[in-house]
Image (cartoon, rainbow, N blue to C red):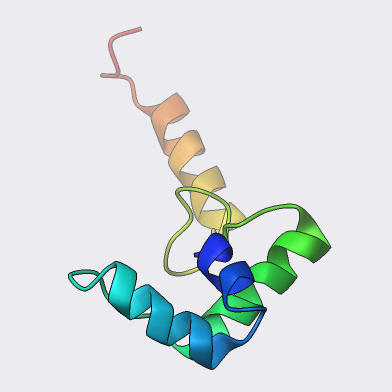
Length: 79
């Protein structure tokens, strides 16, 4: 994606058109996606928007704590 964006001289509309020509069977990103991906890489050094494996709601530490306490308190846990 970034190579296509560079090849389109950092023009999102051109990049989208070129990407569609090069990869006709792939989902076509919006023109903003090219610039946003480039900016994110420049600012953070990462391509991913989120940490790998993190999806949906943010983690709830209180829930995790209750689960760990329940596991520790379970007499049938096999320890």
